[in-house]
Length: 185
Image (tube, rainbow, N blue to C red):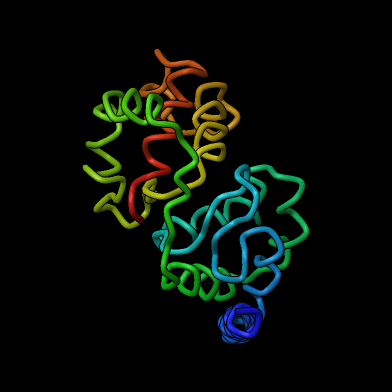
């Protein structure tokens, strides 16, 4: 049994190293926070795997250009060229996403009811048709709730999102985040 466990662990390590080795050089720095396979190990950081490439490119450019502020991201994006951004966005968009599923059943049910406000843009299952809008399905729930709060406060600028989230607060954001985190990416 120990040999089987060791063999399985070794195979996982080799597979994850192989995936990381295939990552473009500029994407490798992202792995320290967003994971070698684009799945973050911190619920406050977004998963990048399977995200829309257009959305990722816009957000990376926004961080690089100072439109979107984040002290942790600054050193990683400050010297990225537009070509680097496209390469990183394309790479992470092609990785398979995984459901974070960080929500409890009661929150998920409440969030599913509230998601009616989100579906016209983010799709029936958290995957929008527009290439520049983010997939919500499978995303980290703490990250989603944090971003909804940022839109409501104006920390993240989007007149549309600010209008949609205006009537909601922390409890609704937690429910929406729980619901979207458990959907299959």
